[in-house]
Image 1 (cartoon, one colour):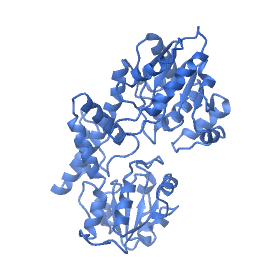
Image 2 (image 1 turned 180 degrees about the vertical axis):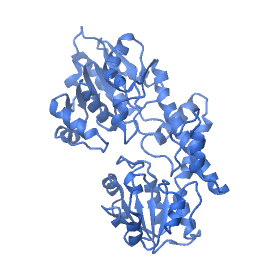
Image 3 (image 1 turned 90 degrees about the vertical axis):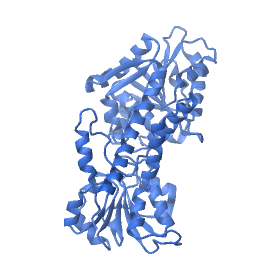
Image 4 (image 1 turned 120 degrees about the vertical axis):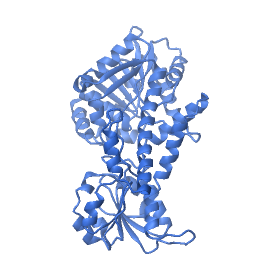
Length: 450
């Protein structure tokens, strides 16, 4: 099939590469000419494991091409996927300017399709609020071209760091459409992936599909905030959250996924999507109280590591620079492992908190350092090696769960530090082992090792 993918951000690039991998002919469209030139040269602007291999393969095979003009492929496309950004507005709602702008462009280009061509299936792939498919349909229809089309919702369920695997072997595919023809087009596109995964197919109305995406992310965010709340209670009562989460996760009604305590959720999806869903609830007179609490709990959780550091060093309010003279090594800048995404990253808040108190930092990350350098410049020092990052530091702080950090040689780390002090925001190590090795160790939801 012939597919247009409009937008070459995270979702757009993954979708374009994976559809090409399934044998479809894909044209990626973006208004950023410089970005498109880089893509045409084979330069992938984001880090996602496995993406570059597939991208390069199908750029070479000819199944994947790029243009700045969606009219290039609109005449014979079977489906046009809208994969542009929906940033958060000041009131918490999703900003649909880019989505509706693409809808206008599609409407203006529809006249290029032969009158006898089958309906163009316009797919909202971006995360959009309830009612967006109807709005996109209205914008396209307003052009009055007389060409047949249908707007459907097909939300993405991709995890940064494993997006290729999620796309190629989905748990489920959700399609919100009105016609059997639209469903047939989408089944033809996704059939190879569902065969590989045994995933489920869900056809529903567009409104239900739009809400499904937000509800899924809200449920996952709620689980994260819940276990973080339990972790804080564990510290107060002297319990160990690792034991608690393992036991409750063994209940088949609960499961173990998203029950890992940490420094709060970040990234491009959960914070934005929760605010958008809260806004929708208010608009329709149904305030979502559990989600409001989830947002507040996460805001508090992102300060937990900084609070532990302040408490350990006896920081009192009112002192002008109570951490002056202290230097920290910080492992991890991305909001999670296996990505270079620093949006809503706890590390950035931690850097702000510690430098405001007079401390200095040397930081390390396997993929996110260029993004941090572009954002905060020389506010911190940067180390290309995780052991060298610890040179002369008073303590090590861990903010991202990169596997290499868990596998690090702690004896070599200790040799670089001034003191064997660690603040582990990801619970990479067990307190008993750290105590035996002579560390002062602070983690989330477990007894500290003094």
